Length: 319
Image (cartoon, rainbow, N blue to C red; front, side, top):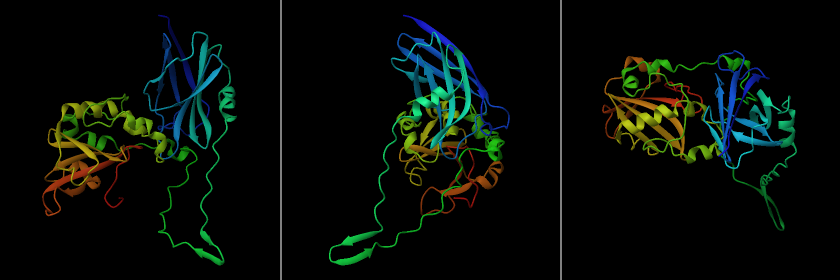
Protein backbone atom coordinates (compact mmCIF):
# COMPACT_ATOMS: atom_id res chain seq x y z
CA UNK A 1 0.00 0.00 0.00
CA UNK A 2 1.56 3.31 -1.14
CA UNK A 3 2.38 5.94 1.47
CA UNK A 4 2.92 9.64 0.74
CA UNK A 5 3.88 12.40 3.15
CA UNK A 6 4.40 16.11 2.44
CA UNK A 7 4.44 19.25 4.56
CA UNK A 8 4.06 22.95 3.76
CA UNK A 9 4.94 25.90 5.99
CA UNK A 10 2.27 28.58 6.44
CA UNK A 11 3.04 32.28 6.26
CA UNK A 12 0.75 35.10 7.32
CA UNK A 13 -0.98 37.05 4.53
CA UNK A 14 -3.37 39.12 6.69
CA UNK A 15 -2.88 40.61 10.16
CA UNK A 16 -5.34 40.54 13.05
CA UNK A 17 -5.91 36.79 13.54
CA UNK A 18 -3.17 36.00 16.06
CA UNK A 19 -4.22 35.85 19.72
CA UNK A 20 -0.91 37.26 20.96
CA UNK A 21 -0.46 39.90 18.25
CA UNK A 22 2.56 38.23 16.64
CA UNK A 23 2.78 37.05 13.03
CA UNK A 24 0.69 33.94 12.46
CA UNK A 25 2.82 30.89 11.62
CA UNK A 26 2.34 27.15 11.39
CA UNK A 27 2.45 24.15 9.09
CA UNK A 28 0.08 21.71 7.41
CA UNK A 29 0.99 18.02 7.19
CA UNK A 30 -0.49 15.79 4.48
CA UNK A 31 -0.26 11.99 4.75
CA UNK A 32 -1.85 9.61 2.24
CA UNK A 33 -2.06 5.88 2.95
CA UNK A 34 -3.74 4.01 0.15
CA UNK A 35 -6.66 6.26 -0.81
CA UNK A 36 -7.17 7.96 2.57
CA UNK A 37 -5.67 11.44 2.90
CA UNK A 38 -5.13 12.93 6.38
CA UNK A 39 -4.59 16.69 6.70
CA UNK A 40 -3.16 17.83 10.05
CA UNK A 41 -2.87 21.61 10.67
CA UNK A 42 -0.46 22.92 13.27
CA UNK A 43 -1.22 26.61 13.79
CA UNK A 44 0.04 28.53 16.81
CA UNK A 45 -2.03 31.19 18.64
CA UNK A 46 -4.95 31.36 16.20
CA UNK A 47 -7.42 33.87 17.63
CA UNK A 48 -10.80 32.51 18.87
CA UNK A 49 -13.92 33.74 17.07
CA UNK A 50 -17.13 35.34 18.30
CA UNK A 51 -18.66 35.06 14.83
CA UNK A 52 -17.86 33.38 11.53
CA UNK A 53 -15.62 30.34 11.20
CA UNK A 54 -12.22 29.18 9.95
CA UNK A 55 -11.80 27.06 6.81
CA UNK A 56 -8.85 25.30 5.16
CA UNK A 57 -8.65 25.35 1.36
CA UNK A 58 -6.54 22.48 0.01
CA UNK A 59 -5.08 22.25 -3.52
CA UNK A 60 -3.83 18.87 -4.76
CA UNK A 61 -3.68 17.35 -8.25
CA UNK A 62 -5.41 20.40 -9.70
CA UNK A 63 -8.44 20.08 -7.42
CA UNK A 64 -9.52 22.40 -4.58
CA UNK A 65 -11.21 21.19 -1.39
CA UNK A 66 -12.85 23.42 1.22
CA UNK A 67 -12.50 21.80 4.67
CA UNK A 68 -13.90 22.82 8.07
CA UNK A 69 -11.04 23.81 10.42
CA UNK A 70 -11.51 22.65 14.01
CA UNK A 71 -8.44 23.91 15.82
CA UNK A 72 -5.55 21.53 15.21
CA UNK A 73 -7.71 18.42 14.83
CA UNK A 74 -6.81 16.13 11.87
CA UNK A 75 -9.09 16.17 8.81
CA UNK A 76 -9.54 12.93 6.84
CA UNK A 77 -10.61 12.58 3.21
CA UNK A 78 -11.75 9.28 1.73
CA UNK A 79 -10.44 8.75 -1.81
CA UNK A 80 -8.24 11.81 -1.33
CA UNK A 81 -5.93 13.10 -4.08
CA UNK A 82 -2.23 12.28 -4.26
CA UNK A 83 0.19 14.77 -2.66
CA UNK A 84 3.35 13.22 -4.12
CA UNK A 85 3.79 16.16 -6.51
CA UNK A 86 3.03 18.70 -3.78
CA UNK A 87 0.04 20.57 -2.38
CA UNK A 88 -1.03 24.02 -1.18
CA UNK A 89 -3.00 25.06 1.91
CA UNK A 90 -4.82 28.33 2.58
CA UNK A 91 -6.39 29.25 5.94
CA UNK A 92 -9.37 31.62 5.59
CA UNK A 93 -11.77 33.46 7.87
CA UNK A 94 -15.27 32.87 6.50
CA UNK A 95 -18.14 35.27 7.09
CA UNK A 96 -19.60 35.91 3.68
CA UNK A 97 -16.66 35.91 1.25
CA UNK A 98 -13.54 34.07 2.55
CA UNK A 99 -10.65 36.24 3.73
CA UNK A 100 -7.13 34.71 3.36
CA UNK A 101 -5.15 34.54 6.61
CA UNK A 102 -2.14 32.25 5.99
CA UNK A 103 -0.83 30.38 2.93
CA UNK A 104 1.72 27.64 2.32
CA UNK A 105 2.80 25.41 -0.57
CA UNK A 106 5.27 22.69 -1.48
CA UNK A 107 6.30 20.86 -4.64
CA UNK A 108 4.48 21.79 -7.87
CA UNK A 109 1.58 23.54 -6.13
CA UNK A 110 0.60 27.10 -7.20
CA UNK A 111 2.89 29.80 -5.89
CA UNK A 112 -0.05 32.11 -5.11
CA UNK A 113 -3.27 31.42 -3.24
CA UNK A 114 -5.60 33.05 -5.81
CA UNK A 115 -6.22 29.76 -7.73
CA UNK A 116 -7.60 28.21 -4.52
CA UNK A 117 -10.21 30.96 -4.14
CA UNK A 118 -10.97 31.31 -7.87
CA UNK A 119 -12.16 27.70 -7.91
CA UNK A 120 -14.76 28.34 -5.18
CA UNK A 121 -15.74 31.86 -6.28
CA UNK A 122 -17.54 30.54 -9.36
CA UNK A 123 -19.72 28.13 -7.45
CA UNK A 124 -23.38 29.06 -7.54
CA UNK A 125 -24.69 30.42 -4.29
CA UNK A 126 -28.15 29.43 -3.08
CA UNK A 127 -30.96 31.82 -3.91
CA UNK A 128 -32.09 33.59 -0.73
CA UNK A 129 -35.59 32.81 0.45
CA UNK A 130 -37.75 35.96 0.29
CA UNK A 131 -38.95 37.28 3.62
CA UNK A 132 -42.72 37.12 4.21
CA UNK A 133 -44.70 40.36 3.80
CA UNK A 134 -45.51 42.45 6.83
CA UNK A 135 -49.17 42.64 5.78
CA UNK A 136 -51.67 39.96 4.78
CA UNK A 137 -53.57 40.65 1.50
CA UNK A 138 -57.31 40.01 1.97
CA UNK A 139 -59.65 39.96 -1.06
CA UNK A 140 -62.01 42.94 -1.28
CA UNK A 141 -60.57 44.49 1.86
CA UNK A 142 -57.55 46.64 2.80
CA UNK A 143 -54.40 44.95 4.03
CA UNK A 144 -54.46 44.13 7.71
CA UNK A 145 -51.13 44.59 9.53
CA UNK A 146 -49.71 41.61 11.35
CA UNK A 147 -49.67 41.58 15.14
CA UNK A 148 -46.64 43.36 16.64
CA UNK A 149 -43.72 41.12 17.44
CA UNK A 150 -41.53 41.01 20.54
CA UNK A 151 -38.45 43.20 19.95
CA UNK A 152 -35.26 41.22 19.56
CA UNK A 153 -32.15 42.46 21.41
CA UNK A 154 -29.49 44.01 19.22
CA UNK A 155 -26.95 41.43 17.98
CA UNK A 156 -23.29 41.48 18.86
CA UNK A 157 -21.19 44.12 17.06
CA UNK A 158 -20.61 43.14 13.44
CA UNK A 159 -17.03 41.85 13.48
CA UNK A 160 -16.03 41.38 9.88
CA UNK A 161 -12.93 39.76 11.33
CA UNK A 162 -11.11 39.68 14.68
CA UNK A 163 -9.26 42.92 13.94
CA UNK A 164 -6.16 44.26 15.61
CA UNK A 165 -8.16 45.45 18.63
CA UNK A 166 -8.86 41.75 19.44
CA UNK A 167 -5.50 40.44 18.25
CA UNK A 168 -3.93 40.74 21.69
CA UNK A 169 -6.97 39.37 23.51
CA UNK A 170 -6.17 36.81 26.18
CA UNK A 171 -8.48 34.93 28.48
CA UNK A 172 -8.19 34.58 32.21
CA UNK A 173 -7.88 30.79 31.88
CA UNK A 174 -5.36 30.31 34.66
CA UNK A 175 -7.42 32.01 37.39
CA UNK A 176 -9.53 28.88 37.94
CA UNK A 177 -7.06 26.38 36.52
CA UNK A 178 -4.84 27.05 39.52
CA UNK A 179 -7.47 25.74 41.93
CA UNK A 180 -7.18 22.32 43.54
CA UNK A 181 -10.25 20.98 41.78
CA UNK A 182 -8.69 21.48 38.35
CA UNK A 183 -5.45 19.87 39.42
CA UNK A 184 -7.48 16.88 40.65
CA UNK A 185 -9.09 16.71 37.21
CA UNK A 186 -5.68 16.61 35.55
CA UNK A 187 -6.32 19.92 33.81
CA UNK A 188 -3.62 22.29 34.95
CA UNK A 189 -3.27 23.72 31.45
CA UNK A 190 -6.50 24.15 29.52
CA UNK A 191 -4.99 25.09 26.16
CA UNK A 192 -4.08 21.85 24.40
CA UNK A 193 -4.95 20.07 21.16
CA UNK A 194 -8.24 18.23 20.65
CA UNK A 195 -9.59 15.03 19.06
CA UNK A 196 -12.96 13.30 18.85
CA UNK A 197 -14.13 11.00 21.56
CA UNK A 198 -17.41 9.29 22.41
CA UNK A 199 -16.66 8.83 26.10
CA UNK A 200 -19.58 9.08 28.52
CA UNK A 201 -20.08 12.65 29.67
CA UNK A 202 -18.38 14.25 26.65
CA UNK A 203 -20.11 15.83 23.68
CA UNK A 204 -21.10 13.42 20.91
CA UNK A 205 -19.05 13.36 17.71
CA UNK A 206 -22.09 14.56 15.76
CA UNK A 207 -21.69 17.97 17.43
CA UNK A 208 -18.85 18.81 15.08
CA UNK A 209 -20.99 18.12 12.06
CA UNK A 210 -23.54 20.65 13.30
CA UNK A 211 -21.09 23.54 13.64
CA UNK A 212 -22.36 25.24 10.50
CA UNK A 213 -25.80 25.42 12.12
CA UNK A 214 -24.40 27.34 15.10
CA UNK A 215 -24.26 31.08 14.36
CA UNK A 216 -22.08 32.01 17.32
CA UNK A 217 -18.82 30.44 16.18
CA UNK A 218 -16.82 27.29 15.62
CA UNK A 219 -16.30 26.16 19.27
CA UNK A 220 -12.61 27.04 18.92
CA UNK A 221 -11.93 27.00 22.67
CA UNK A 222 -13.96 23.84 23.30
CA UNK A 223 -11.96 21.85 20.75
CA UNK A 224 -8.65 23.23 22.10
CA UNK A 225 -9.27 21.47 25.46
CA UNK A 226 -11.57 18.64 24.31
CA UNK A 227 -8.96 15.90 24.84
CA UNK A 228 -8.57 16.76 28.53
CA UNK A 229 -12.31 17.24 28.97
CA UNK A 230 -12.93 13.75 27.57
CA UNK A 231 -10.27 12.29 29.87
CA UNK A 232 -11.79 14.03 32.91
CA UNK A 233 -15.29 12.78 32.08
CA UNK A 234 -14.12 9.21 31.50
CA UNK A 235 -12.21 9.11 34.81
CA UNK A 236 -14.66 11.07 36.99
CA UNK A 237 -17.74 9.84 38.83
CA UNK A 238 -21.02 10.83 37.20
CA UNK A 239 -23.05 13.32 39.26
CA UNK A 240 -26.68 14.33 38.62
CA UNK A 241 -27.34 16.87 41.37
CA UNK A 242 -27.25 19.83 38.98
CA UNK A 243 -29.28 18.22 36.20
CA UNK A 244 -32.49 19.65 37.66
CA UNK A 245 -31.12 23.18 37.24
CA UNK A 246 -29.51 22.44 33.87
CA UNK A 247 -31.51 19.70 32.07
CA UNK A 248 -29.21 19.60 29.03
CA UNK A 249 -25.96 19.10 30.92
CA UNK A 250 -23.56 16.39 32.09
CA UNK A 251 -21.43 16.50 35.24
CA UNK A 252 -18.67 14.40 36.80
CA UNK A 253 -17.12 14.67 40.24
CA UNK A 254 -13.36 15.23 40.40
CA UNK A 255 -11.98 15.73 43.89
CA UNK A 256 -14.00 18.42 45.68
CA UNK A 257 -15.50 19.90 42.52
CA UNK A 258 -17.80 19.05 39.63
CA UNK A 259 -16.87 19.50 35.97
CA UNK A 260 -19.79 20.07 33.64
CA UNK A 261 -20.80 20.75 30.03
CA UNK A 262 -24.06 22.63 29.44
CA UNK A 263 -25.41 22.26 25.89
CA UNK A 264 -27.94 24.04 23.70
CA UNK A 265 -29.64 21.93 21.02
CA UNK A 266 -27.00 19.25 21.49
CA UNK A 267 -24.04 21.61 21.01
CA UNK A 268 -21.73 22.57 23.93
CA UNK A 269 -22.50 26.11 25.11
CA UNK A 270 -20.86 26.48 28.55
CA UNK A 271 -17.94 24.70 30.25
CA UNK A 272 -18.50 24.76 34.01
CA UNK A 273 -16.80 24.14 37.36
CA UNK A 274 -19.05 23.77 40.42
CA UNK A 275 -18.05 23.70 44.11
CA UNK A 276 -20.46 22.80 46.91
CA UNK A 277 -20.61 24.78 50.14
CA UNK A 278 -18.60 27.96 50.62
CA UNK A 279 -17.39 29.83 47.56
CA UNK A 280 -13.62 29.41 46.91
CA UNK A 281 -11.70 32.67 46.84
CA UNK A 282 -10.25 31.79 43.43
CA UNK A 283 -13.68 32.07 41.82
CA UNK A 284 -14.04 35.77 42.67
CA UNK A 285 -16.93 37.50 40.89
CA UNK A 286 -17.20 34.72 38.30
CA UNK A 287 -19.18 32.42 40.60
CA UNK A 288 -22.98 32.13 40.51
CA UNK A 289 -24.85 30.32 43.29
CA UNK A 290 -27.17 27.60 41.95
CA UNK A 291 -29.45 25.84 44.50
CA UNK A 292 -29.87 22.10 44.09
CA UNK A 293 -33.64 22.32 44.69
CA UNK A 294 -36.15 25.18 44.26
CA UNK A 295 -37.04 24.87 47.95
CA UNK A 296 -33.56 25.56 49.31
CA UNK A 297 -31.63 28.82 49.34
CA UNK A 298 -28.63 27.55 51.28
CA UNK A 299 -27.89 24.16 49.74
CA UNK A 300 -26.32 24.32 46.32
CA UNK A 301 -23.20 24.92 44.28
CA UNK A 302 -21.07 27.87 43.31
CA UNK A 303 -20.71 27.58 39.52
CA UNK A 304 -18.50 29.37 37.00
CA UNK A 305 -19.40 29.43 33.30
CA UNK A 306 -16.86 29.57 30.48
CA UNK A 307 -17.94 30.24 26.88
CA UNK A 308 -17.31 27.15 24.70
CA UNK A 309 -16.62 29.38 21.69
CA UNK A 310 -14.15 31.91 23.11
CA UNK A 311 -13.12 30.70 26.59
CA UNK A 312 -14.35 33.92 28.21
CA UNK A 313 -15.77 33.72 31.73
CA UNK A 314 -19.23 35.01 32.58
CA UNK A 315 -19.13 37.38 35.57
CA UNK A 316 -22.05 38.02 37.91
CA UNK A 317 -24.61 40.30 36.25
CA UNK A 318 -23.66 39.55 32.65
CA UNK A 319 -26.11 36.65 32.11
